[in-house]
Length: 320
Image (cartoon, rainbow, N blue to C red; front, side, top):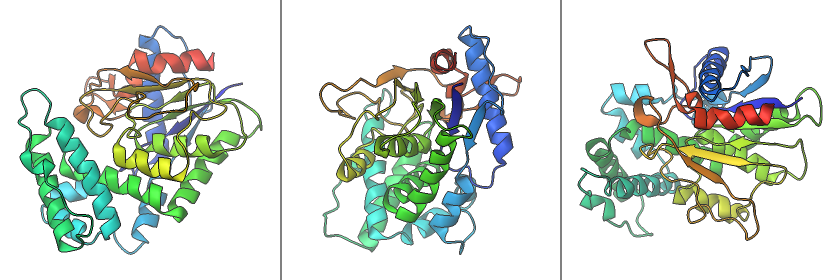
């Protein structure tokens, strides 16, 4: 039997795990129906890897209330306060990502390229100068970039940074996915669906393992793996590879999804010669912000990546 392993993205701390899994399965069921598949996975068929509270607790050390997108958006002074408390290494990482988003948005039709996005902060500059540069860049995101707010981008980037740079965070989250892959019956193949930050986790675990269950499909909708700062950290740790044991890697993205930013093509995520290719697909995500995996609409229908037949279809093929 082939199992289904679901790995969520960012800013889901404090959410009910069972409700989130139900949303994912609801959207996936809608996508499978649209793809012409009769398959409807249930929670008995799936393992939902929930690490939202774990990530928040490890990042904040339990000393502060959760810093969520909603909290930042409701308090205009929270953003500069939070940025001012970040260490220089994290400031540089976040600033690199924000500038890449701004540079990409500057070439979008109808949006004037923000000149300030091209400004350079010298490598030796630290402290207040980095804070000022990042606060200014985030202000440009709110002003120029459609579909994404500075609060959303900052939250995603901080979570990615914590996962990539904090060994304690990475060990705990990786262990959760490794346990889900092993499952109750050793050796069962597993289809892995990993959204947003979850795709970074899934890639890290699958690329780093020496053995384990076969993964006939790795599906990474809305993945930030192509963002330069993310890719460079992964490549510095180990050469980029097509994970062993993965039969097929499909990576859908809405071109308007600036939290994913790039299609996973060979120029942004280069693999060794002779490797299987990543199937980069362009889709249209109807969820607000174009990034969500599963989003319930008022009419009872589903939006989000998983509700699309181009995304759910490969899951149905792999599970059957």
